[in-house]
Length: 369
Image 1 (cartoon, helix red, strand yellow):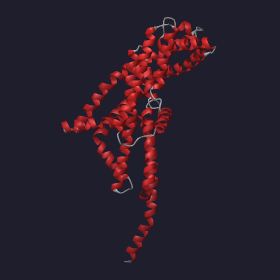
Image 2 (cartoon, one colour):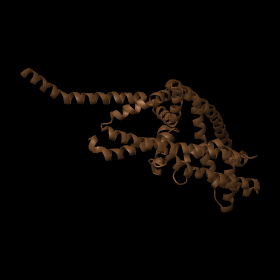
Image 3 (cartoon, helix red, strand yellow):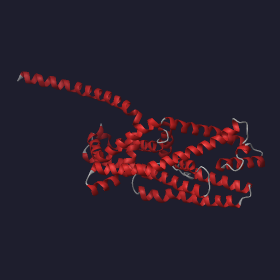
Image 4 (cartoon, one colour):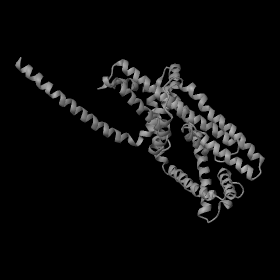
């Protein structure tokens, strides 16, 4: 009896140290795992967002075919067919538009020319802005043309540098692309198990865990569908308008519209309104009724683009958690700085999840601690 009591005392005394050692071991392994996954972190997050968006489609395919792996593979192939071809076309067009704009500025600053010479015979949107700003400069004794040319030179050189880096990093991009495909495949077929495992890890009662997971789902739904998807729709519709009304660099402007759509209050108008005003001023300067009519048409189209947000958001988000506009704004630009262009999607999502975690902790701290 004495021996068994002494053994139980030793075991009890070892338990705190065992827990501490396990926690230290877990933190060490977690740190190493983060360093291993870190180069592909943005790829995995984007894959998770895409998998979340199309998960209802996967569930439908899975019910029809009764084969999870086959349904996931078919859906990924369809996504590749739908996205890859437009992506290749958009990348090619964007590269050309950026390069053409860069050449015009390069001609001004490196070949000792002028914007008047570079824009001889038209030149499209960039030249129309310069012409308009120059006309205002002459009328009001300003030097807008010079400042425009200098500022655009910096922007264009960065864009063309980014395109060049994109071409050089094609092998790396292909690797991330393959990882994304595999990640989406397993997220589709094992999504339910992943969520169940995550729920079981929470140090809460089942009732509280279910409520927290439901709250997270509402936040993700509001961010992904209420911000990201709507911004993409606005950018695509705006791009169609730029093309219809003869604005050059419609793809570049469409991408800028997607970014601007995240900005509260002004949104897509930050792009389509200056383009319309520039076209109107250019039409007034050149006495072109066609340009002025196109500018008016683009304004009407732009108003329609901006209304999309007000119409779709209540229907998509509904009574689910609404995300504060400031969170979206900080998430977009913080995400851009940290993750690059994909940060437009990642930033708002991570920031909203963090804020949701703080709220949940505030409500459930008596169960967590």
